[in-house]
Length: 145
Image 1 (cartoon, rainbow, N blue to C red):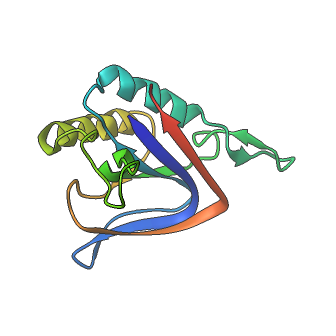
Image 2 (image 1 turned 90 degrees about the horizontal axis):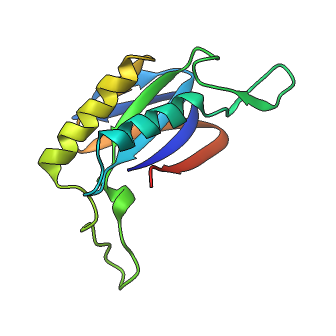
């Protein structure tokens, strides 16, 4: 499982010219799954995301978690995180989990996240337009394996 985390001041995701998810301060998560991923990978990643200390404290040191600052999450499915570009110029997505199972894993991930924090989402498999005001900019790559 891979998640690209971007610290955000405000962000939204749009499908068919309609905003389907919107947050203020928090994280934008681009979420991808590979064939071997399980619920354990989801649990590990949620712990990592919720405890990631990349918000400034009173001394302007990145020392606070998203929960400590009252942030929200915008979660966007992103199979292209598993693009393989080693051969040629056209990426291969063979390592990405197939749609049906990936959709279920993505839903489980968001459901478990919502037990701890406010979560907005895009629409799995849709053509989405994501608007992000990346704060910092701070972008962090997480992998469960």
